[in-house]
Image (cartoon, rainbow, N blue to C red; front, side, top):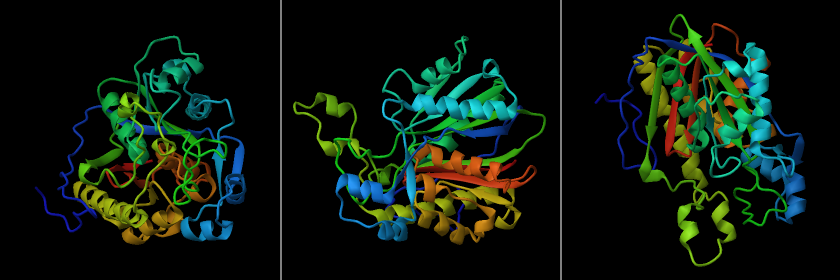
Amino acid sequence: MHSYASDKMIGSTMAYPDARPFRHRRFGQLLSTGAGMPGTVVSNQALIDGMDLIASDRAIQHSIGIRERRHVKRGNKPSVYLERAARECLVRAKVAPEKISRIIYARLTGDQAIPATSLNVLARLGVRTGIPVMDVSVACSGFVHATELALNCINAGDEYVLVLGGDRAAVDVEANVQKDTRTVFLNGDGFAAALFGVCDRQKFFGRYFYTDSSIGDFAYIPFGTETLCKAHQPGQEEFVLHMPNGPNIHQSIIDSTLIISSRLFSLCNKTVDDIDFFITSDQTAMSWKAQLQTLGIPESKSCSCFHKYGNTVAAMVPLNLNEAIVTEKLKKGMTVLLMGHGAGASGGGFIFEY
């Protein structure tokens, strides 16, 4: 196993695998992106007033860097906004929905437990051919995992793979769940899409992924099948994000950044100087800036939507990617370092040419 200068995650008892090169004979490329953001904007003060919390807008902005987030309109399901993101993405690529070979949706909870929410998106797009669709659940790193699956599917023969990310992650004022001031301001609802297609040359130069079960309790939502076997009603605390030690999560994101980047640079024979743009998951504004500082990348070569959208879980990475493209900060031909971190327990990324 190769020895890396950065090879340790805070609180971890595990070793991390080496990076493996692509063995693809059929290459994939990013064709387009899209976003399907809810129209309801919720300020910090609206949450404070609505939940009768002891907090201040100034303190929240200072501690995590968020000003507002989006909330899904009551009665709407995630598939409504996923369809919007998908259609915007397909229009930009000039690809009809009927041309899609597969849909992969990186989610938190989706419309329901079963069937897959991606099936609902397929129906909403009006596609009458029963193409393969699936939901994957890898929290904040879900989009990058789904992207790897998409590239593998293109190598195996798919023409166009639509990758979706995001969910209803925000805590609503009227929701009958525990409202913890340590986490209630973090999340927002957000939805994004990316379309991948075939390319005649290699544009994704390297990929790297890891998981770490020893730190799986850094951030978690307790609700699961065990809840269905309990004699008593589920408690308010079972449906919300638990984050026992915020500083540990922050450090795990920095550690993950080093683990992923060191392996990708080694695999692709590149350095940070070869990177034109950096896209990552921004769990807070501070975690985004810490990643930039760790890698020595200026803010002008990256972007973060956290201040206006919050932590949208699997939508963070594609929303930042979409923002970079629509603002023309990210231009064709640029070399991109893209990564995502799932509370330290899962992470991965790519170096690719846009």
